[in-house]
Image 1 (cartoon, rainbow, N blue to C red):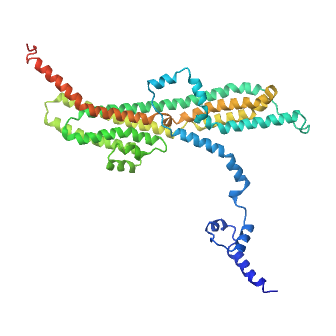
Image 2 (cartoon, rainbow, N blue to C red; image 1 turned 180 degrees about the horizontal axis):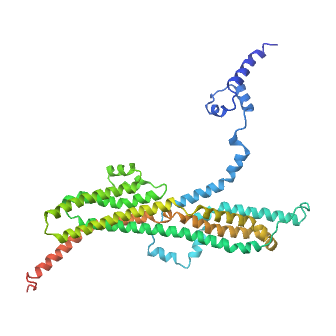
Image 3 (tube, rainbow, N blue to C red; image 1 turned 180 degrees about the vertical axis):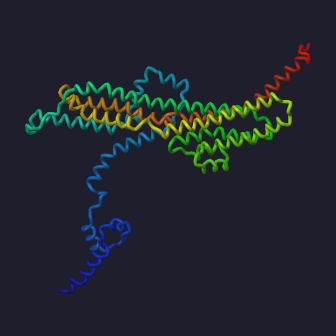
Length: 428
């Protein structure tokens, strides 16, 4: 009788003493042997605490977060979408009389509307619950001590103007940031084009041609680097690969602040050109007017570099400093409390109409607040890729047409000199 029990006791004792440790079971479980002893495994699994990942609470939380997470992914994909500059055809479509139908049909693809699905569904569900409860109480389906949820509409009438002003001021503050970002980028693009024009027109020596070409590449690369600096998730290497040489690109990628690194490239290149130009003017002291023009040219270049630094400062300020968070939190809390109590306020007048009324109110007011939050960060809303591409094409076109325009002007001057004599009278 003792022989059958002796072999089992050692295995059970070994299993309990060596493997059953509640604190480390979660660590040992992933590295459990592929062919464990069946008895030992059953004992451990039945005696171990419940796995938190399979608890009903976590399952419920994951289900409730499924729709908000999906809406956030839709929103973030929309934030990364490239915007385009408007042309004449797009303006015609923009002011078309069919725009309302087009906008209505595209509602299901709007990221603003899709991002509002979680709050709108939540508040509409609350309205359904309150309407169902009040209906049950009115039909005596519940005990008599359950009251009907109703209240006077006077508090809403008094606070409605405050909510409207709060939403208007919140959206207006966001649009001011959007406008400031747009103006900053307008100055950056204008400074890029102007500096490139000065370099193309001011550097004429053939010995400076390689440095001139590299300088123009740095100028074209600056707005691209600034765009990647202010937009999250940008492909810096892919955007700059076609603008910079490999060695220059590696230096820029390894720097902590890429736009300022490119400004250093621009400044050093300009300094080298200025030194050679200054030596040329020192050898010819009679060309005083040319030297004054050179000083003016130098001041213009320094002003453009300052414009680049100013653009970086404005962009970083907008990225690092949002609208005061107390303002954003107040607007959000006001909207949430407003729509949680809206079915109670409207029950006496609307009854089951509180459900569509809550849906329309939540969809409209939260949409206004969502637009303010989106344009608060202005740079994903701007067509920065198109602005950089337009600046690059303008510079490349200016470089391509430089020699052709200069040849045409030299030919005109030669014809003019042949048609006039040295004393100013035309040759007959």
